[in-house]
Length: 117
Image 1 (cartoon, one colour):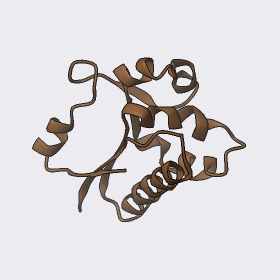
Image 2 (image 1 turned 45 degrees about the horizontal axis):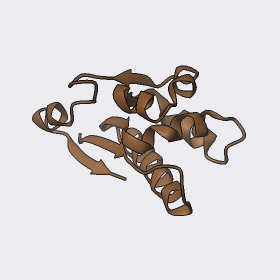
Image 3 (image 1 turned 60 degrees about the vertical axis):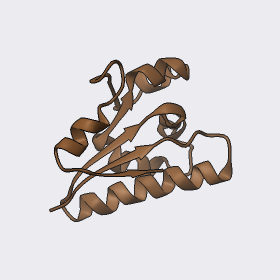
Image 4 (image 1 turned 180 degrees about the horizontal axis):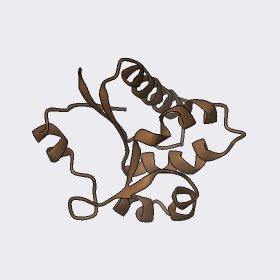
């Protein structure tokens, strides 16, 4: 069994950013289907995706809901990118383990492979 942490850093500004977040969601889905231990972390501008993908009219909402249980968001960045309301309306938990941010180091220490999008 693999341990994989997928980190979404891409914002919502372009088609290439959409491609990155979709690739991230697909990777988490594939890992889940293979019973891997998987984490999905929205960090930096990536936190902007949570309200977008939570919208039922978004074309990738269904994909998001299949992996949402594995997701968490940088507590600091949720505030910095002004998406508190959208994150609060989702099932994604804020994570401020290390000075308000998710601890990537703790994942590495636990043996996780880190993939960034």
